[in-house]
Image (cartoon, rainbow, N blue to C red; front, top):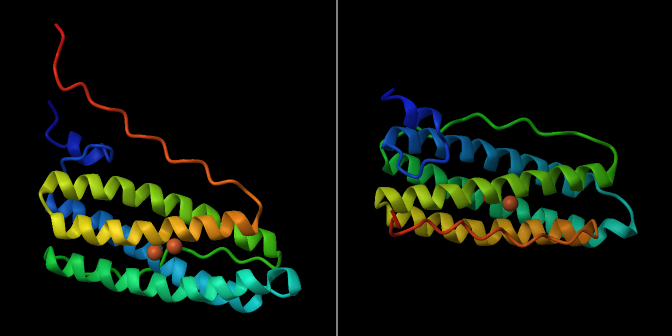
Length: 169
Ligand SMILES: [Fe+2]
Ligand SMILES: [Fe+2]
């Protein structure tokens, strides 16, 4: 069997420290993206209809900064070097498009952290898992804020499929 199989299967919960550092650096790049987009969108969203959400986006920017610091701290703790690259930020003059871009990113972020928490648990990195759990609570709130601004119902997350504990054969 190919010993690199684990490397190519991101859904596998058992990952190495190096893989965790790489994945956390991708998460960090996503946090940088979120900081930038919330700073910009909160200032350019104009009109009475967007006053409340613009204020919320400004608050999100601060929370994303706190997430970036926490993720960078965990990368450093694991012996890695925190990335300095942000994922690309979409620009638009259309307020709905801006909010949709943020919502898409939040959904992706929640999915990424759900996976990362399971991987951290599998590694026995419980402090990392606790840090990620605190972050995912806020990411879900961001998702809800954006969804309600766009009048979209947030679908409930799917329960992880229970693994069969006992083989029946
Ligand atoms: Fe975040
Ligand atoms: Fe967020």
